[in-house]
Each structure stands twice: as structure tokens, then as C-alpha cells.
Length: 267
Image (tube, rainbow, N blue to C red; front, side, top):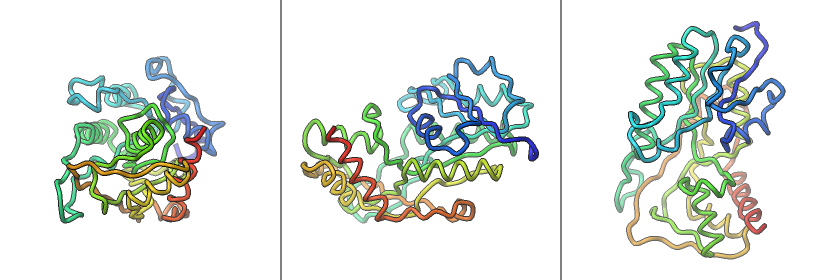
């Protein structure tokens, strides 16, 4: 496989992640995009990598055995194929830590549990031919995905003129941009890396600061907090990915990106 020209099969034609990755990727001319329903028609021998961005919506609110188990089915299809299977996982597979000394700790979500199960399935089925990406919060402008952190903030701001948090004011998160995510994934593909990587900035960004940046870009609004607040701070180690990707995503760049997301919300 080392001598083969990089060719990438991307599954998930309607995925917001896949659309943005293909738009920004330096490998866009070497990418074939398909719906997951067309997977059985594909000659896998043509590809060095397969990225599955397709996701069953039931993964958010049902146990794994009640979902369509898309990744497991694809891994069985490519069982004897010499390509790298790329699974976009989530930072939510990590257990919560006591990072803020007050209020209630959020438990790992059903989504996080399901992602953890899928990771184990991929590792078992693909042996060493897999690449798992544990992704931090992406600053995205997808107003349809209202169950995700950033889209939820943007929708509330646009409709109600405020951002509402159920997190402690001192909470922080690890944010990345689509550009940074794409650069990381492209570098891993180019180097034909396998294993598990955190895709993260490694920076602690306070949620209140982030909300203020979005509001400043939008030009109006306020931040309010619910009565019942949770602890859910996190920052992922990016030491492993930084050995491959020589890009620093600073806190200043993250907040500036949030400002421009807010600005875009005006239109």
C-alpha cells in the first residue's frame, strides 16, 4: 500500500463533516464521495483509505444494538482489503473529570458510550488497519444540528437574542476549526498513520469568553445561565498529533473564529 497513490473513499454524502472536509482537503481530486447505501457497489481495491462520515441518527438516543451499526457493517465488507479505515469518533468517549469544584458532574452520554463501543468494534475487525480520530468540539456553522454544542448556541442567539448555558461559568472546552481538522486528517492520511489520535487544539477556552466572542460578532445578545449547572470541562492532549501537524491553533485564533461565526449569523 505504501507505493499506491492516495485515493480516498468518503462515505456520507449528506454529512456536514464530509462536505467541509472535501471542500478544504488537499486530496479533493483523489476523493470519491458516496452514500452509505451504495457501499456494496464499490471496488475497494482502488482505495488506500476509507473515511466513514455517515452516522445513524439513532446513535444519539438509542443503545448501540438498536442502531444500524454502519461502521461494523462496512468493516465486515472490507475485511480482507488492504486499506485504512478511518472512524471519526468523539472526545465524549473520555470519562468526565472533576475539573470545577462545584455543581454536578455530567455523566458520559449515550452517544459517547456508543462511540466507545464502535471504536472497540473497529479495532477488533480492522486489526492494525484503522485510524480513529477523537475529535474536540468543532466550531461549525450548521444550524440544523441543534443537538450539538455550537449550533445550539447559535440557534438560541438568533431566535431569542441570548446564549444559554447549563454549564458552570468557569467551564472550559477544547475547540478546533474545520481548517485545523482537515489539516490534521490530511497529514495523517499522507503519512498513512494508523491507531488512535486526538484531534484537538490543546487549549482551554472558557465558555463565557467564547459566548462573548460570538455575541460580539453578531452585534447583540447576552449570556444567561440555567439554575441547574453542570461540570463538563475538558482539554485533550494533542502531543501525538503535533508530532505530525506543525500548526498551532491558538486561543486567540479560536476566539476570532467564534467572532466571525457570530458575524455570519447576521445574514
